[in-house]
Length: 306
Ligand SMILES: *[C@@H]1O[C@H](CO)[C@@H](O)[C@H](O)[C@H]1NC(C)=O
Image (cartoon, rainbow, N blue to C red; front, top):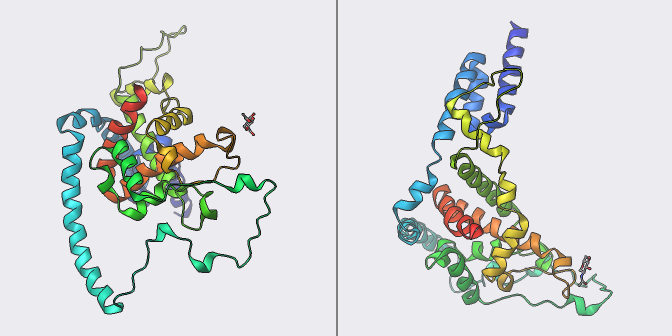
């Protein structure tokens, strides 16, 4: 009985490691299949894969309402939720203390994080000089260019600044966008993969010289498209950086290039594409996957293709 149990776990674990299965099934169902044994695990994989392939109508959904109307609706819902929390917070704040107003966290380096003496000994002091944007108005203009008229109100102030803050800025003492960028990048890759799968079918491979029949299934047919296109080609770092440049992201980006006179030598491509990923990640955390999906499709992928 013990060895049978071990085999059950191994088989379920192998199923969970298959790339398709990992994409298709949420963790809870994987855990459930681990508990239920091999037959149940196989069944879950099959249905879940089919469901993932068939939910790719993102583009059709995007055509129904304009992005601005859609976002206005989202904003209304958010405002209602924010009002509810604001009343609760106000009560707590007035109870805590009255009068003393802290400046927003993005705008200053906390005193306790500063060493009494600077340990920096730059070889060329001129290279230490780099000015970044401090004006919320300028930042809002960027978000409006990127996400449309409702863009500046999609995210709270702290998140808006955090998403455009690279870890080279202020030695990372005001937070930075690495983890938001990781999340956003995964969301973008998923959207691109959905577009590739739902795109025009790749031509069937040439008949086999030995008459062998490959396994065929309607759900798997579209996967052939990945042989021709990969998400990495569609959203390469160069294209993302170019999009960021066109939107004026460089003007609001908070970073410190190693060589102010040679930005590409300082990794401007990584920094700008990372910030775009981070904004998507922030939108996804703040407004949910549906809004993030539309931002990716309409505000990024459409622009990359033109
Ligand atoms: C910029 O820096 C890179 C990497 O350090 C170097 O390869 C390139 O030649 C530099 N460009 C200029 C114009 O100095």
